[in-house]
Image (cartoon, rainbow, N blue to C red; front, top):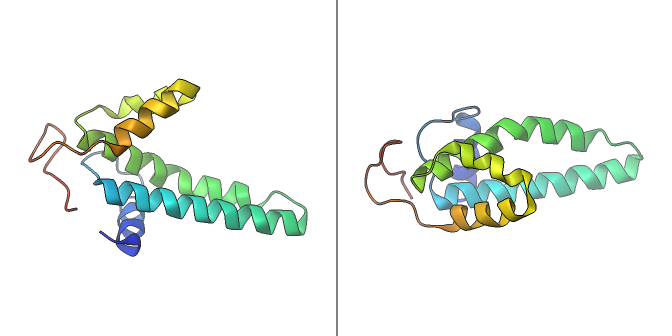
Length: 115
């Protein structure tokens, strides 16, 4: 999966919290989120008002949560693990989970995603 396919997939499954997402899909979308955040912050700093960052954050919130939950499903974990990100240690744990290879074949969350 390349950058464009990952972003298109994440937006086509805008608020889908079922199924599985491959590592490339998650990490390419994370890169897209970072690039949008940097661009929005740059525009906000140039105009002196924090408008674009808020709009971008709200627009990317549900697709980001959806792809994160689907990525956890691929590692055979429940999506509720996302809540551990509310702690600093939890962020490290989630990064490890997101980087872990998915379970081969089908699991309780569905068939293996196309890499």
